[in-house]
Image (cartoon, rainbow, N blue to C red; front, side, top):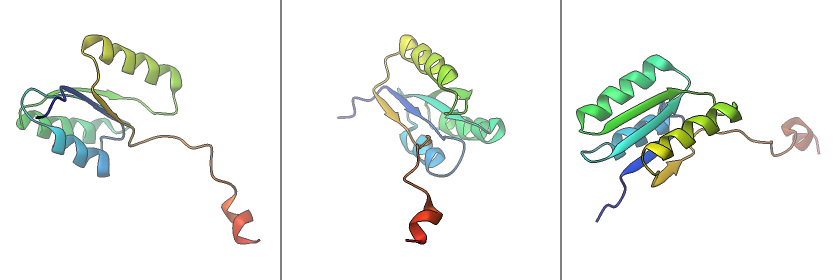
Amino acid sequence: MNTLKHVVITGASSGLGAALAIRYAAPDIRLSLLGRHQGRLADIATAARNKGARVTTACVDVTDRTEMEKTLLAWDDEQPVDLAIANAGTSAGTGNVQETLNQ
C-alpha cells in the first residue's frame, strides 16, 4: 500500500530528477519539484499532471540556502512532505582531484 501523498524532488528539470518525477506522478500524489531550468521544469510538471499528479514547481538553486529553506518549509506547511529526494545538491568536496592523482 502506497502511503506517500507529498513527494519533493530537487534537480527535477532533467536527468534522474525528471525521471523520478514522472515515476512518482499519479492521482492523489502531490509533487513539489525544484530545478534551475524553468522551461524544462514546466515540461516535466505538465507530464506529471497528465498522469494525474498535483504539481508545484519552483526554480531554486540548491546552493541558495535561504530560498531553499523558505520554499521547503512553505510546501511542508501546505501539506506535510512524506518523501524528499535530494537529487541535486552541493558538496564540500572529497579533496583535490588533481592532488589525489599526483600522489
